[in-house]
Length: 475
Image 1 (cartoon, rainbow, N blue to C red):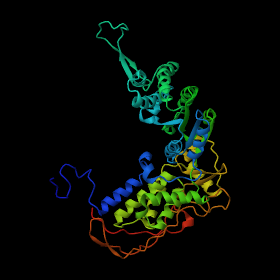
Image 2 (tube, rainbow, N blue to C red; image 1 turned 90 degrees about the vertical axis):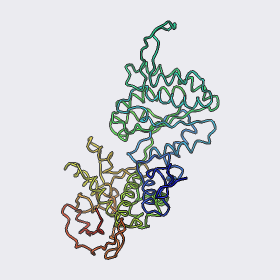
Image 3 (cartoon, one colour; image 1 turned 30 degrees about the horizontal axis):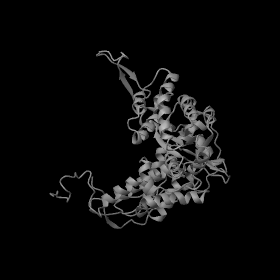
Image 4 (tube, rainbow, N blue to C red; image 1 turned 180 degrees about the vertical axis):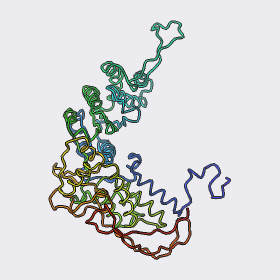
């Protein structure tokens, strides 16, 4: 078979083929992919999943094993691992012979900004139709369900007379006109499909993901009132991932419509040794070969216990190491990643919001009295931890560390404070003055440590920041 100059077969393009072994670029690309915080959780389950202590999935599994037709609301901040917990839940109850689970990302087939009652029921029907098609492909409810979901063309003459004119019947997954009619239309084929599934498995549990990105609580309430209630009347159990705001204000009324409310809290790395070891295990499993042990500890500390931010920080530090010509991530690269992350978290904040962050940092007190306060929680500037169901609040470490623009004159030793371990203690690696290859293979020498200088607007507790020089890089 003919090959290219790089050794690839001519039928495989260089863009998609596996790079040669021992290639530094290929190694960094592979590790970066494992650290992608926006990657598909399902694809990471087999290779990278680490079981979390006291996981929500374990509690939900117990609830559904005992009450298969019960309904549950799972809430938490973006990136807290709710989708991963749903997939873990699916794994936990896969061996229960009389329960079948259907995972559905509601946002994949419908614009959640235009959610209407019936949209969730229609998607449950589609998932049932796909399952029934494997055992009874000629079942008429399969086509009926798909027509109701996506729309169809019908002959206006019900008796089959000669006519060239057809009219379009819109599907439910397009904004509909009448709520009750949508539910009624979807209910008929859903009942028929459930009957087929229940010939083999008595109970059905649907896991509805993606609705945590729904900003309109009224739309969510309509879904809960109509779709979840309809599924419950059919004896179908539901676990719905909802937005964090469902825990506050008027959203609490929505939560009360479920049998239980499960909160996927952040992991308190300063007070939860098991949680800290869990996060260390996540990094070690995904990219342990590229992370020095001190850098893993620093990344875990800087993440604030937010799994998505842990992976994002590690990915940024990996890029810094690649640009520096290093083969592994050290404290210096972690420091750069934390610095950039902290600056991003401080951008766009108004004085009243900064004042709230100061109060949280000094006193650990946080009361959600406005939409702006809630936004600080939802954007992870303020993190809420739970211990024995009691909350503790802290500013996200990079936003409150010496590398951000949030200044402070001190920190209290009260229970709500984030302790004096507010951010990773990051020292500059002792690599200056040492010749090394840059990423293009050229020799370059660090000029030695630069003089420290005062950084206006930085955390006064941290003192001076060590400025660093990187090897010269060709542009």
